[in-house]
Length: 335
Ligand code: AQP
Image (cartoon, rainbow, N blue to C red):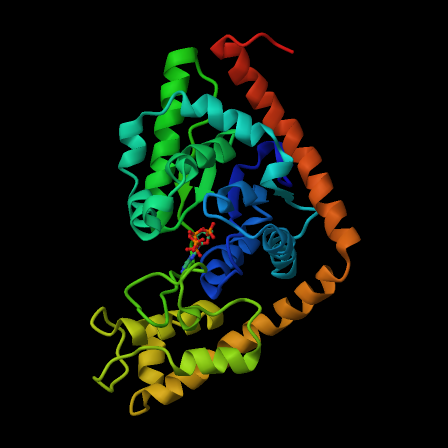
């Protein structure tokens, strides 16, 4: 029997347009999403409200929001098969987040390691939104009766909190939310910073040499990879003691589908320069068609507008039903 939307499990995921997307976002998230779209009923969101937890230049935010949507489509996410939308176009996210905030404890939010890290980085200029960010994330997920959330290691704690909030609400007011499970993708890479391979590659890193952007031109990719930090061992092994080399191997594996042991065998007797050259060429080859398609899509804003508007229509319909249920249970008078 062909799977219909009705019996497919629901997946929700999103990326914040808080900077230009990196190879980490691509290999760690988007490339996996492409392989999920036939089996699952997927909601892929551009989470612009999350991005503003850190101050954004308005015109850059607008530009990047559209660019993220274009990258989703250019990477192979088919708009007709999935719900692609912009978070702020579905007001239920903000409304639900408030209702959930009133069902979340300060202690729970204070324990979030991402908040601790970011608050250290931004010091006194930290906004309350960065503290309550995981509640908005819970709203994103719970509004769509989500079964599964693809998560990297770094987001596990936030998903656990979403589950706690959902269970608490269900116990307090009667069953309302589906409690989501993490989805560990079959393939998936954690891409590390090229300058500090013990840290993940991050689009808001201050050092532009630490990340490869999905839209970086070939010569920039070659330069950044050639400058990637390795070690002084001089032999290509796949081990925790050589995180820089390991990262380059992981990148090639994620792109080519090879295994680390195959690559270690292949590079026997070769040097880091060979590995870097091959990694750069693999990245360039993988990103070239995506870049071309992104540029084509960005020159057709009308088409992108159609996609995000119809995505928002679908998302609003589902999210509002869940929101109304919550409001009623809490005791708010129906409109
Ligand atoms: N380096 C990475 N390796 C693997 N996966 C990654 N993701 C991000 N970086 C890597 C995955 O991308 C998805 C969404 O990321 P996000 O942009 O919404 O937030 P993030 O994880 O905080 O990414 P950044 O680049 O580090 O953003 P900033 O710098 O703004 O905080 C997630 O599925 C994530 O696992």
